[in-house]
Length: 254
Ligand code: PGA
Image 1 (cartoon, rainbow, N blue to C red):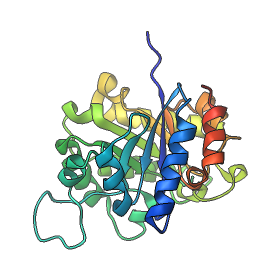
Image 2 (cartoon, helix red, strand yellow):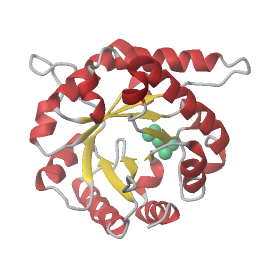
Image 3 (cartoon, helix red, strand yellow):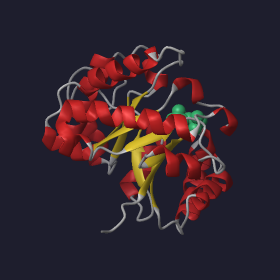
Image 4 (cartoon, rainbow, N blue to C red):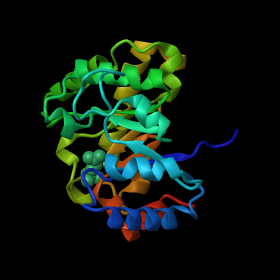
């Protein structure tokens, strides 16, 4: 059976500041992705640069947004609908990122966005993750509730386009040393799979890919992938440095 590719999602967040730098980062990123055979790379870029790049398209990388609107139409100042994204050649969308949840997005709102984006035909990267870990394992209950509530009521036919990204908030934006250990990730990814099986049954629950995000770099990417029982990585700050991003991609094999 053909081995499916590792999914590497680069989250540029609110970077860079201008078009010329964004274009330069795009070209340099494509340059380092070009020789990668084992990974499929998605660049999630701020709106002002995203739609231009995605409209032109690329054979080397796919494009993703970092959020999408809750409604398809209506008076929603400042929002961008999933259809607008789809019609611009955008293939993926990150939803429920902890930095958006920190701005007030609830599980219910995230669930509504997830359903609409899936119905529109976008591939959804749904982010979940606890803020902190306690010794009694209460964070597992938090994670379970957040996952179930953010999934809402998705019909099984849409599950093929759903990806769950586990991003513990305490591990985001740190050094690789402070990221999650592969053993802890293994335990948590199994827990997430168990919840997905509980919700969607064995056959459907197990096809949903799980990514890990939170201070991933070339040093920890191979062990997180090998021991973590995950299908890919969500990479923040290291994706803004093409040299480091290239090293990360090489570290997981060509
Ligand atoms: P980080 O960000 O790699 O900078 O920790 C990951 C994310 O927030 O998606």
